[in-house]
Amino acid sequence: MTKSSLILAAALPALLLGGCMGTRNRGLESVHQPVVTRADYALDLATSGGLLANGESERLNGWLGAMRLGFGDTVSVDDPNRVATGAERQVAAVVGEYGLLLGEPPAVSRAPVTPGTLRVVVSRSRATVPGCPDWSRDASNEFDSNTSSNQGCSVNSNLAAMVARPTDLVHGSSSVGYLDPVIRGRAIEEYRKAAPTGRGGTAVQAAGVAGGK
Image (cartoon, rainbow, N blue to C red):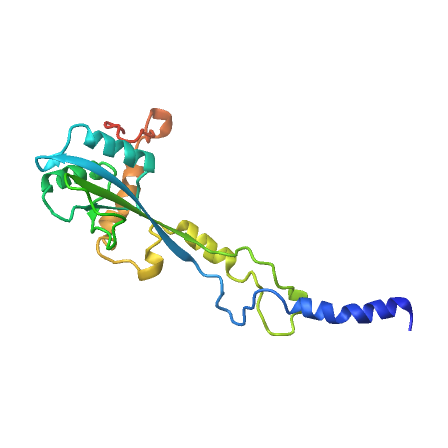
């Protein structure tokens, strides 16, 4: 037996073992699925006489702007004593400027709310597909009936990136308010009615600027 044949014979078990290593995916359903994580951000605001103290509404508005609050986020008020109902209405008014409504407070608070304050909590979810892309398994030496280790990475990663409300991947979405064709067609109708951009129509307005076309 030649020297090269001996080297090949010694390396063959390692090559076969290498073909069996990597992510196992024995079915058409991908092992790479979206994972939804949630982060809570809290801001304590001072209250006075059941209302927000002077300057707190502006501070809240600046904080929400810095957070780039938008669709998919959930805003809630944590006030265990429920003594600052007027302040909650003020918070709801500020949040309403971002097109959102107040939601239910989170089940677990980070720390007790100090008397004379209320806590505004922004809950933000994010969907990702860990481990993608995944080329850990050598498909050219597949003797175990596995699909590609990268199976489903593209589809599920795009799904995780495009879903507007990541929590819908966990418990689905309610159909309330989404099946009205008038609501669905409103954006298209406004687009068709708008003047061409060459005539000054469909101008992009800064957030919070009224009077846009």
